[in-house]
Image: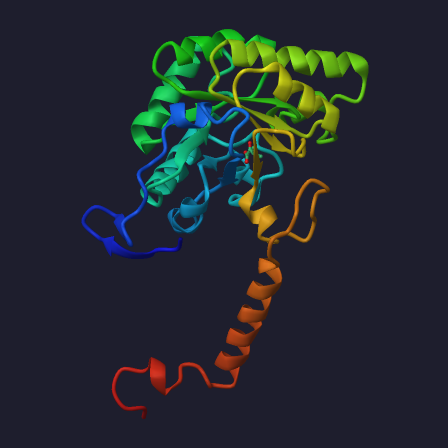
Length: 286
Ligand code: KIV
């Protein structure tokens, strides 16, 4: 279902027509284990959130915005200020999906208390329903601390991009028996600590399957397995905004090519003075 929007400039709320579905809740998502697959995409702006919202169960304001929006080389330099600004925009642009905001590197690892302060700030400033954080066994006490204090948490195991400097790159994880077993242990620890869902990223397919069978919460795969309880992609990857398509991405459009053509057509129209045309002018042309 697609909607049109009227912007209320006093509140910055865009009012959709037709009236939207009621927003999903965290318990509804948690209850989807083994059920209808969970649809999740990243979103970073209000307009993109409006377009994705009717089709998604979850919108993730991922710290991938570091690369996608800000042109950074990794997510390590993403700040809480960035996450709050984009999180608020995505909440304003959505009515149906549960909005989750990534806690960026450095905002939660130090202690459960630091994590709580960061999560509380994100939720208060954005209106998001919860947060996502990366890590395994070491982060389980933090997940429990947050979950017991009213912060819904999605865990993130396998390839954890914030740890790129430790991992040494973005290759798939779980190829050795030892790493396979370690990541299953990470997933169980985070799920047992109270995460309501778990992103499983960049792992060999049998590992994603094993994690999905081992944990009680829904798993959401990216570069993982169709056996996961849901799937997530970075929206710009799925729209074909970048030249490079990682193996785990399917392009559902070729937007970069279409934008390039539109920009070229605009440039040509300006240069040959065919734009603006009569239709775009106020009053009679000179
Ligand atoms: O930051 C992000 O976009 C993510 C997804 C890739 C899961 O964490």
